[in-house]
Image (cartoon, rainbow, N blue to C red):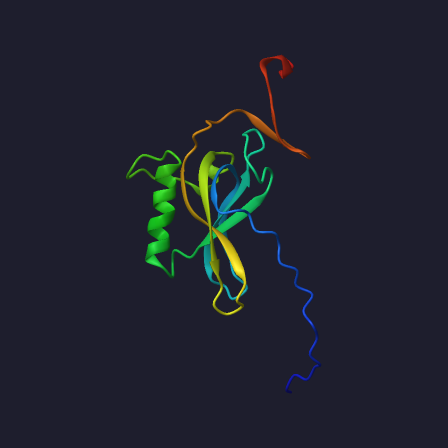
Length: 151
């Protein structure tokens, strides 16, 4: 039976784009998933760090790779692992990256189909701000000091 309906105005509201540039970020999630069509992908979710003086604190951005469909994506995932401190040729688990800090470079492009400006993580590099023990709270990341340890 054919589908019949009435056209309706979209209620899509574009999210605010993160300004293009470099940001210190923390990987808050990383793993594998499947598209609605069943295609496997690898994802990284970053949160721009609040403990570093920079714009866009607390903002999140994700990046998806399709390593089974694109050999270039598989190579890029491996190069990101290297940038996150995995020695060349060593094996790794994606879950090992959760909580790690790095520098992300955000770029913009115009989607050819929709005409909308989009953002993406172009590359990552080792953090220039270092890493510290953090915990996530409602306001972002908070430092734990030696005085905060109960033992």
